[in-house]
Image 1: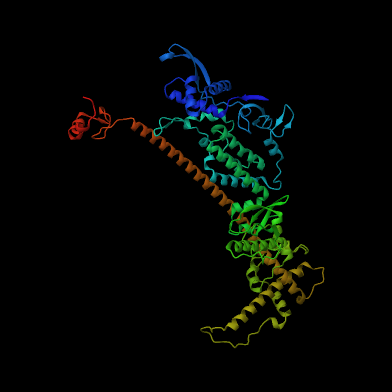
Image 2 (image 1 turned 90 degrees about the horizontal axis):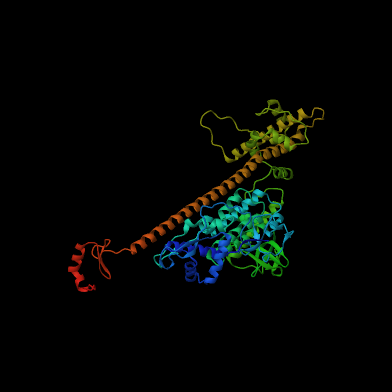
Amino acid sequence: MYRRRMSCPKAVQQLWDAVKVTRCQHQVPTLEKIAKYMSRTHSVTEEEVSRQLQYCVRDGLLLVKKSKGSKGAKLGIEQEVYRLPEVENDDNNESHDWYCFECHLGGDVIPCQGCHRAYHVACLTNTLGTKDKFICTVCQSCDEDSSLPNIKLSKLNMLLTWVCIVLKDRYSSLVNSSEFLRRSILIGSPGAQVDIGGAKESWRVRYLVYRPVDLGTMMAAAKSQKYPNVAAFLAHAQSIVHSVVIFHGAHSDLADKSRQMLRECLSEIAQIRACHSCYEAAARRENRHWFCKPCRPPHTLVFAGSPYMPAKVLQEKDDKLEVVYFGPEHSRATVERDSTLPITDPVGYLKKNCPAWSKAMDELARHQKMLSASNQPSDSEDSDVEEPISKEKISLVKETQPIVKSPSSLKRERFSSDEESVKKEEPKKEVVVKKKRGRPPKNSLTSVSASSTPSTTPVSTEPKRKPGRPRRKKPEEEVEEKLSLDKQLTSEVASEISNEEEIKTENQRPESPTTTAPSTTKNEEEIVSSSCMEPQVRSFGTQTVKKEKANIEIIAKLKEELDEVRTAHAEELKTLKETHSQEVAATKKKQWCYNCEQEAIYHCCWNTAYCSTECQQVHWQREHKRVCRRKR
């Protein structure tokens, strides 16, 4: 156990103010002057002031020296004069914090061997380690936190970045520590007060706050992926409260705001721990159906609340369920298990004629549809959520559900088929001899056409027409021509496949063309359709992920720039207000000519002065000689 500091940080700030104000009033900051200021401003007794001054001198927060008075009743009398610590001393060689991390006060503390924090013995609930080696609860939680074991470090820090964005939007005053760790000291009468603190008193932070932390620092650490778990992020949020309470006091407005920020941070972290997929979907909001996207594993669906509404179950604790409702608000609640119904119950007696119920049931239906589609091996076309599709998923789709193409679509896709996709789709077959693209040889075309039945090739019996303007065809004739062209193209593809089969199966018994053509045509349709669809789906998912990352980076960058502009604007406004108040105070101290309103140098009576004798004569003859109160 070590005695770091005995002085109260709030009393230290008040004593520094007393010394500063006494110096500005051109007086010597002795015990009497400081006690008088503390009694008038903070209602502190002289005994308490004397005790806190001794603590500050012991801790090195105030300097004391003996000097003799130079004027007045103290002329030649030796007295103790208090001074502020050296501002130029920027070295902080301390290994641990001076104040308890739990109650934010000084006294006898135990330093942690794993971090810079220190605690009172009375403030500790559970201790870990031996008598000589103490480990604080923050270090324990950082080492043992396993609330999100199956999440990558990059994704965890991305979620924490979104938490920082939410906190920065709601608590903009806690973004920059150089702004909220600033002390203002007002002197003068009410209405003409002057701030003698501000940025000039930044040295106080180095003497009171061991390690300043703000929301900007937390966001930079999250972007750099420096948080190994959620507990480290919460430790930084607690450090903000610790710094604010030490510098401004436990009952200040900024301390209340920092504690509210910590509660908000704990709420956001609880949502991430409950389901990080739901939190990510809520942060991204890719489309208006973001809430319908199923998680992995999917949540249990129930009717909860009073009145009943469809909801997802996020967590189960004893007999209580934490749910989030479908509908326009997507509100969260903790309900009793007895006040829920299975989602399979009939909703006839639950149905209500209100927009919220309709919206909730529509979202529930879409969620169930997307959930059933995600359980199937095929891609769902009803879902509006864009997901990057992996190669394994595509190959599984192609093996379980062959895609049937029409002859017209086969004509368009025949020239874009790839040899490599043929090898991937037919692992059982032997090595295929590569063949040049283009139209098949005439002999293969004639062999296939000869083997086909007469009904597959329509014969035109129309007589020849003379050259000239072509005759307009009837719709029936156009349909027949298209069908004949599609069938001819199918026979060409079949002939190509049959030729390849003949080359590969030299030692096998060849089959007849009539039995080989239909099966090979079906396999060719699967190969062509899969080889054409795979690159499109793969590139579609890749482009979607890249666009999402680019949009997130752009939004974060714009918000940072907006925060910087707001900070600069606030600083400029504060500087202008300070300058204006100083100018107003200086203006009020002057006297002005009653006649021409210039600065006056001649005083006449209680409310009248003049800048020159000419103005005095003019105003005297005009009206002032009748109301002048100066004694003659």
